[in-house]
Every structure is written in structure tokens, then in C-alpha cells.
Length: 395
Ligand SMILES: Nc1ncnc2c1ncn2[C@@H]1O[C@H](COP(=O)(O)OP(=O)(O)O)[C@@H](O)[C@H]1O
Ligand SMILES: [Mg+2]
Image (cartoon, rainbow, N blue to C red; front, side):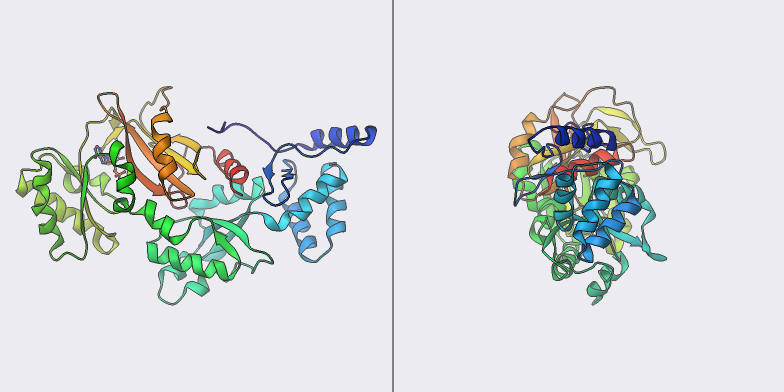
């Protein structure tokens, strides 16, 4: 697993020393840290002390075709050898775009909830860009949603980081970004695969609670779900849709203490549907409730909080592991990821999350998968580490 605390950027002091060594020696020194260019296999250096305003000026120069001026300026600003500045400038158009949602009131600014992520993406050398979530959610407005994104000269890759999208909204986003030559790493098919639980259930089955579902197209959904409860005998059950639960309305709309108590179950399922309203995704999912190792209960909603972790996976490798809850004393114990690796490698998406939890009997299970683009980064997670790891692993 990647060491989350590693920093692969170069400081100006270090760059001056390298330039000095290069002048003194006969051999050219190449960067050894940073993302490797998939085309020429050179490491693209990250300049830690490069100010955002200067980086912006450099990109403007490059866009205007003034590459030698950009190289000279980069050398002046960082003290790096000319070759290093050239490598950076030549790869400047290859930076991955990170697509964030804008603030509805102030479209040129990122949504306040993603401010820290936007800044971190910029800081590590990724290209943040803005789309309008509101336009994407409306009929026939998806072209409008990406007006702020410039058409790229060459195809570049991209990752969306924002609010959850339905599979059909994601398909639209994917298509309009492609027209701008930004190709999202995750295809619409891969998005749906991790976003909708039934799609990946066969892959995670061995390590996740027994699960059944009733698609929304089935008439009288609540009653159809009630009719399927005998599958669980008299075990406790959790209700959710293909994506989300009403976990903060735990007793009222999430937890069914005994599947055989049809009256109680019907009330919970109906309340769940009422709370989801038009946001219901895909249909109803029913899962066997498994006793988890409890940390505490949520300070506001009172829902039980268990020892759970979120693993972000990029290109088949764990990128970052964070505690799932902000509350509760996790102590030092970290999960062993080894048992999950064979499943991680089968998941058909380049960027996803796997939430895992410790059972009361000591086993670890998979709670759910999610698409990595719309999964929340817990507040305590180190945002810079997250984006640096993204920068280094995504090619
Ligand atoms: N089958 C289950 N057994 C025990 N606890 C569960 C189960 N399913 C969900 N939970 C608890 O409910 C929480 C919310 O469930 P989850 O499936 O992650 O829904 P959401 O997508 O709303 O986060 C989980 O974090 C876990 O604490
Ligand atoms: Mg969850």
C-alpha cells in the first residue's frame, strides 16, 4: 500500500542543489520522483514552492505557444535545471483534470464543500475545473454544464469529484466532457458497477452480508419487499436502496429487528420509501444485519457506529485508507487489507471505494462499494495526501 505521508515534490532548496550538481558534473540529472509520463517514461517533477499565481502565468505562456519563456521563468522561480523546467513545460498539457461542481450562486467558484479538495488538487499539480451540477441535473442542459471547461488540444484524462450522480447523469457528463477532449477515467458502465449495489454483488458476495433486492419497476414496491422477507427467516435486516440508506433514521427507516415481524418490517420499509421520496435509486435492497464491533452511537442521530474504514482504490491498488466515522475511538487498530485484495482486483472500475467493517466476532466484512468520484473524503483525512496519491497513481 502507498505510504500516505510520502511527499514526492521538490523544494526550491533541493532544486538549487540539483542544478548546482548538474553544473559541476558531466552527466545530466533527471527527476526521480513524481508521476511517470506514460508516453516517454520520464518522471514529471512537482515543484512544492511554486506559487499558484506563477503556475497560472506559466500555463498561460504555454497556451500562447511561448514555451521557451515558460521554461526560463520556471527556472528563475524554482532554481531547477533547464532540463527539468523543459520536462514540466512539455508535459503541462497532460495534467489530469479534476472536475468539481461550482457554487450555484457564484459559478466561477468551487462549491464550498469542495474548496479544500480544489485547492489540494491545484497544489499537487492537477488541473481543477468546474461544472454546474444544477445544469447537469436538468433536462437538455448537459452541454451548458461544462461551458467553463476549455476544449483541450490533446485528449487528457479526468476524474470527477462531486455530488452523487445517477448513472444517467454520469453518462451525460462523460459524453459532454469527451467533446472537450477530457476523458473521465471511469466509464459510465464502471460508474454504475460500483454505484449500484446489485451490479457488483456477485463480486463481493463472499465477504458481504447476504443481500436481495427488488427493482423499482416492480408494482407496489413496498409490498414486494415485504413479500421477500422470508428469505431472512427471523434474522435482523437492513433496508436501503441501490445506493443509500436512511441510516440516521436508524430505528424508523433502516433497521428491521426481525424479518419475521411483517408488520414492523412494513412500517420501516414504508418509512424508508417516504424519506427517500423522488431520490430513490434503483429499488429496495434488503441485507442481513450483521453484529458489528461498536464504537459508540452517533451524537445527533443515535445510530450505532461500528469500526468501519473506507478504502479508496485506484487502478487496482489501495490509495488511501481512512476511518469512516468522525466520532468514536478507533484506537490504533488498522484493518488488514490482504483478504480484500483478490476482490479489489475483480472490481470493474479504475477508481472506487470499498467500505469495510469489523464484526463483533472479529471477522472483517465489506459493507459496500462506491464510486471513488462521488465518495466523501472523511473530514479528518489528509486532503493533500489524497490528491498527491491521485496525481502519482493516475496515468
Ligand atoms: N448488513 C449490515 N449489518 C450491520 N450493519 C449494517 C449493515 N448494513 C449497513 N449497516 C450499518 O449502516 C450503515 C449505513 O449502511 P450503508 O450500506 O453503508 O449505507 P449508506 O450508503 O447510506 O452509507 C453502515 O455504515 C453500517 O454501520
Ligand atoms: Mg455507507
